[in-house]
Image (cartoon, rainbow, N blue to C red):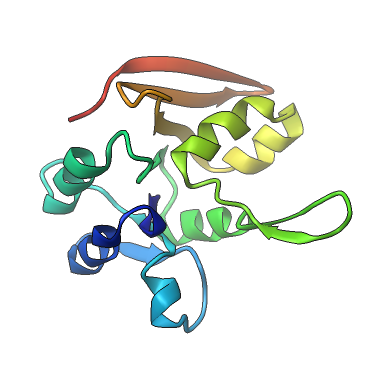
Length: 155
């Protein structure tokens, strides 16, 4: 998941990549929103887009990674259901969970049922750590979530 709102270079890189990609927002979006929207992009180890994101955005909150066996369309459908949330007083808000700064704070607060719903077909979420020098891996095992520091930044 790539957050185009984090840097003006991201949208062009997403648009240019030949990897499978799609906006998490639906419908015919105005160009201003397209340029700042979140995108789901399939990554390949040796692809130019992957290198661009890791070399330029790691540590700056550009990207959260997902490991899953589910198909791209099914994953997008699953992730789209969390883009809007309701507050206790019934206000609708945009939930920027795809931002690693939010995801790494949100996941540890989830109750078991919330973890099951949020993870769905996702095996792992991986994000940069708070200082950007480490990678955090979030993995659900039944009703329990495990958080591991999997090493240093992947650049």
